[in-house]
Image (cartoon, rainbow over all chains, first blue to last red; front, side, top):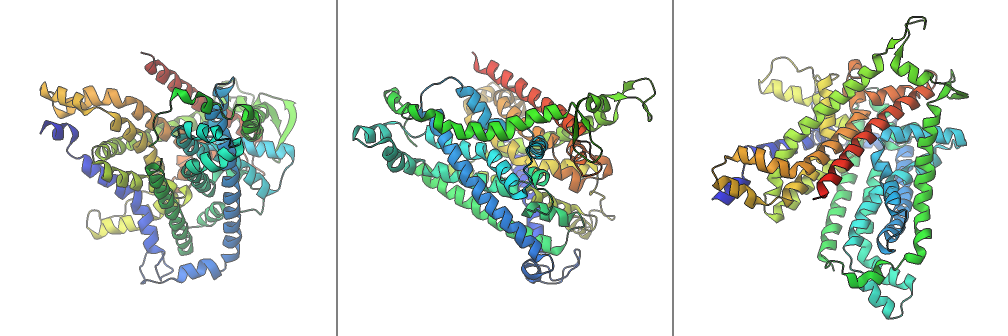
Amino acid sequence: MALRSVRHYPGFFSVALICLIILYAPLVVVMIYSFNASPSLTNWGGVSLRWYFDVFTGPEAPRFKAAAWNSLTIAILASTIATGIATAAALAMLRSGKFKGRSLTFALINLPLMVPEIVIAVATLIFFTMVGITTGYLTILIAHITFCIPFAYLPIAARLQGIDGSYEAAARDLYATRLQSFFLVLLPLLAPGVVSGFLLAFIISLDDFIITNFVKGAGMETLPTAIFGSVKQGIKPNIMAISTLMLAVSILFVTLSYLINRKGRKGP
Amino acid sequence: MAGPATDSGSSAESTYRSARIPLLVPTWVMIGVFLVLPVALMAVYSFLTKEMRGGVIWEFSLAAYDQFFVNRGLFGDEPASLEWTYINVFARSIAQAGIATVLCLLIGFPTAWFIATRPPETRGVWLFLITVPYWVNLLIRTVSLRFLIRENGPLNDALMGAGVISQPLALINTDFAVQLGLFYSYLPFMVLPVYAAVERYNFTWSEAAADLYASRWVVLREIVLPIVKPGIIAGCLLVFIPSLGAFLAPNLLGGAKSFMIGSLIDEQFKKSLGNWPFGAAVSMILMSLVLILLLLYARSTARQERP
């Protein structure tokens, strides 16, 4: 009786429900209205897929297609490279003994999380302007790799911390080279962390608006900057269709990451 | 779960000793060259002279900070006094971010508590549901909120249809909409650290207090809150800091009066109207504020860890 009562506070369940409603209501509403047949935002004209067709074939389609292509390729490249860099860093941070500059390196890895996004945006813009790199694609890619590193690092390091060093020690005792013990022993164990890190970095890259908007230069768009440009002139139904598509991609990713993590936890 | 790392693995712990430098070089280069160096350059820029068409002239000047702090009248010939315009933008941003943080705490704490007191199987589902929105593009979430609370939007329609209100609520383009937007953007950042703290909380302390006739709310205030405080503070920082420099919520949900630091900085880099040194200076001030907050936080946690 006492055990139940100290854990249970009246009203907390309702607040948790409200929390879920607040988090999901806007998304659900946009999802519903993306299927609205009427071009008016306020009236419901029945269910239709016309705005989805509009996204792919309508007047704004070429712009969105180019932006989506940029977003996707940048996200894939940036998260792959950031994951590689973060994996290497995690090995050095957790499996190379104590060393001078370790806490400084740790601070460096986490720096992109501590500096406000808009400040990173300003600093990066100033840097690229001074250096003279004006290719939008390259500047966005470099900026994305940089701020994706800590997001990739966190799950990888967390996973690596939980892997007992004796697996690799055993492999080395059995005359595996360091590369063999890494690729054949450690990496398979580390894989859930690496995949989570990659997925997180991928979503973070796809999500970014502020930094991209600052460094992209003229004529270059990613999906968020293209959507922002359209929304500034008012929300149109095709934006809701794009949003719903992106929503579906995000939910797919988070579900994947959840399943991989759960599977990983059951592992060694 | 793997077993705890044993000391016998000390050789394994330094498997990559000889490869340490090459393993770390990519990180050092990427973050050093593309973040630390740019921030240093930004600091330099804030002390340069502005060029009229955006960009800078390489001449030392305190003009940017002068513009921020000192008011010399419209023509620059009046006696200097404190300039309030930009300090007010900061004050408003701090207030907006603060209100959003309090809202997050009011909703986030009970939610985190509720989740942490579920059986382990259901906890995972709740946490999953709370984290999904974080993975959804922030721009899309903000646009969705804008759509929902529009004057003729679904929220007003529903409330009017239900007869709760007779006039549509003027939510959009207000300060409240911005607070709501920030709250909505960063709510998961509050729930997760608070959840982590509550999950570690030892409920026998509550039981002991309850046995000594403390009421539930006294237990919460006197025992639970002091113990889970580190989680609450972490959550507050995780909400407050991104809210302070937020750009999307004030820009898409707020009106002209809801101008915040993010928009102030953004404006300085718009082609013809811009003032790069001033934008750099505002960024420096924002970054200093955030770093001071983080340092205070680091010091307080370091003090707590020492017995």
